[in-house]
Amino acid sequence: MSRKKAARGKAASSSPSSGSPAGRSSGRAARSSPGIVQMNGVVHPSRPSISSSSEFYDIAFKVMLVGDSGVGKTCLLVRFKDGAFLAGSFISTVGIDFRNKVLNIDGVKVKLQIWDTAGQERFRSVTHAYYRDANALLLLYDVTNKSSFDNIQAWLTEIHEYAQQDVVLMLLGNKADATHDRVVKREEGEKLAKEFGVPFMETSARSGLNVELAFTAVAKELKHRSVKDPSEKFKLQEYVNKEVKGVGCCRS
Ligand SMILES: Nc1nc2c(ncn2[C@@H]2O[C@H](COP(=O)(O)OP(=O)(O)OP(=O)(O)O)[C@@H](O)[C@H]2O)c(=O)[nH]1
Ligand SMILES: [Mg+2]
Image (cartoon, rainbow, N blue to C red; front, side):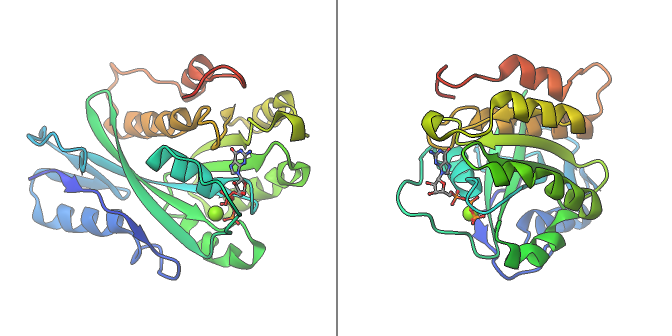
């Protein structure tokens, strides 16, 4: 059977490979299932599945959330996974955690294994160990916190040092709902993203603005790269520009 089952887990102290169910199931599948080809940690089944369960998937990718402590990485993931906002007091992530979500991208079930990293400096060495396994990175800053924006350049340096060269990267300006506390303009985010040639959008884990879009765009790009169908044209930047919603527009 070519379908793999998605899992949920926590891996605060485990190593990238031992703590990664996608990695483990990919390896097993590559050895035991004749219809599967494994490339770069990605599982490619050779025939369509007969299952319609959302727990099963065709291809799997690892996505990492990075950025300063407090920018909203955990809230963004919870919003995407559970459709809810984690209100109340701020509980900083310790080490690293992950959640899985399967998306249907043009008829292909794409499993995203999303790693939620700790933004605090003291966990940086843990985060470094996970970069090389990531297929995509969502780099967040907080539009109400100037230093989180100023630190983006340092994050990009770190990404260039530790992540794969072809990693899919997207810059997200989170907390776009907080209009009264905003200190970073959308145009500033756009300018920085342009400078570094990365797609950009503002998000809000609180309102849900562009949250689904951020993950879907990344999933589409990864699926496009892995399928390599010349008849299929997909440009991440164009897709984002077309689909992105502005503050005060609507819930996503
Ligand atoms: N207004 C607003 N607040 C948000 C949003 N996202 C997160 N927050 C708040 O920001 C604080 C930090 O959110 P987290 O998601 O825990 O931040 P984090 O990036 O995971 O932080 P670390 O785990 O320390 O790296 C919490 O108090 C959240 O309620 C958002 O979109 N809008
Ligand atoms: Mg967190």
